[in-house]
Image (tube, rainbow, N blue to C red; front, side):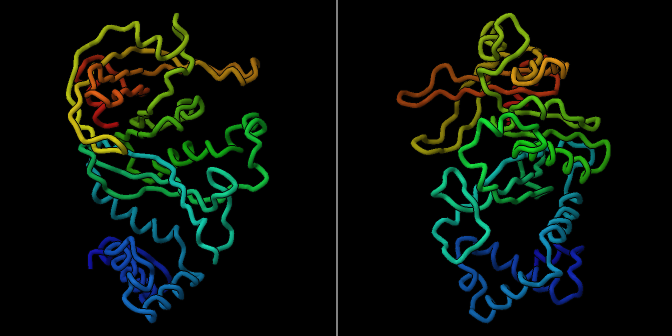
Length: 315
């Protein structure tokens, strides 16, 4: 079985739980939409799965560590390795026989949150998970966003981006080039300010109205002052209300500095952070379609159209 090879380094006490893990992974991967009895083929096999999950010697950390060993074997020797961070809401509102679930988008939705780090090669081919953190929100924090905004990053959910970056670097060979990619939720000062290993870079989708050190003060206005450096085509996959198409994007880019948040105390003396900003924009979208427009921030240098295109394609 492919799962036995993938998890060959797992250590769950003895060979029986190791073997049970491989059987379960094989069955659940083959039918991810099915219930446990449907995926495993019988109630007897399902009961064996439930006993496996109740086994104190079975831990998510041990399973992920074995998978990560196989991921490392698939990595390009020198990189670059694309490392994609994102958070998924696991919504189990309609599952009454559960405990320990907490609110998601609102009080009516219950479940868990999973922040995952997926490695891919420069062509976007997935190589496997490097890190995953699953948690339930604290019920008392619902509806208290203003209070949370005053907390240090270490006490907020946004710390997960920095923790995942540290876990990524710790789990990869030294010296390999790594590019962490994330959506706009990761566009915040402390992630860019976090200490990174040599060869570790960020490529983050930005909020266009974020503050930068520039005569125009805001990222979108600053990039609009830059000339168009050229254009290139990007394949846009199908989305809700959007057919797949090839979009012609123009590119603008400039070196800018991220300003510290206004909410920080003046005495903190936080530095400006140099980055490269990119605007990739579809100036003539098909009739009835929203134009593609990506604002990107990266710690990698971008001095040519080809380098800007590479950042956009990686994102």
